[in-house]
Length: 480
Ligand SMILES: Cc1ncc(COP(=O)(O)O)c(C=O)c1O
Image (cartoon, rainbow, N blue to C red; front, side):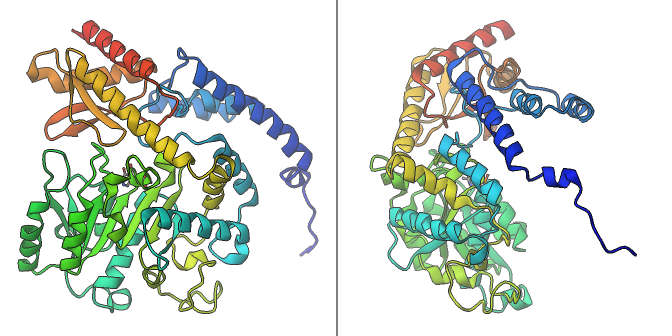
């Protein structure tokens, strides 16, 4: 057998600095033009919706088409939704700041795995700075610490794993469950909490959903009763989860009351602030999370309200010790001892082994625009929510679900017989989607269909809301 090997020319090309420079310059130009167009040309669609099967056929054909990469990137742009468009008001995805996206280019080139210190010296140090900054904004003391992880779903799961470690019998990590464990949460919580509890082996019975009040906040007067019922059924309730805010309506649970209840009943208190936890940066809106500093753990997504590309989530613990205990496992090839508390080996505390260099995308925003940029963004988006709600209330034929606390505004068109109101509003949303002029979503509140907007783009303005309501009215008249 021949043991020599020749480097194929195309393998060398994969890493050509001159190709990188040439293609990179071209690509930045394409992206800058794209940004300019989606931000300034209202007639440019937010989305050119395609049927999924047709989309697949299109891309299968692309494989055999020409190899020009700018042509390929342009097609990707044309066939993707544009969160930078001021008329994007759909799901909760941040409109990434340009510096954060450019940092993404750096991190994707360096690809430092970050889980161990040597595989991400800068990114681990920056992660410490960024998470300490968040901990301080939450109002935690010097015992607090956290890390960045890949999304709110994973962060909530990790927090509940830490809760289990802290509150369930200590053998659970080695031997599995010997008793039924459970968690208390609002019925309005994001589905990932339900999913996390099931992944943890709690089963359907172990996710106890407490009804919400008319503001879609957990009804705290029911806590005692639900906890007692659970105990009577033989469940060991280990945690209470608060929403800051909920996904459907952007409602903030009464965190102060939840915190006292958790303390009095020896429960781990976790706050899912994936969406609205960012108000800790805002002097104007931080009252919404009063009591957050009493939580054992808090999740805040940077990729929702805090200007980074997805995914980028902070999970912060009131007591850093708990974060080290979550995964007590040996990994000899990574580090000598799981017991030593090394903040710089972030993989000791995260679900991920190889981890994205998320910290750069946060740090670069703070470095370039200053600490108060998150506050400005939160204030702008929450203020816009109120502006839009007022316009809806003033408009005949429309109904606002509730005065929004956050930037999530639910409403519906009502100038039609009540028996068709749900299907009619769905049809409105579908027509809007196909037109591409705006991107909004829909939700069910009880049995009722509502149009749902999350105002994510600080460049969205009052004129865009007026245009949206005009367009809905026009569609409604056509449909009738
Ligand atoms: C309140 C809340 N928690 C968790 C999540 C899930 O976060 P991610 O999409 O980052 O996994 C969401 C997503 O919308 C959310 O709104």
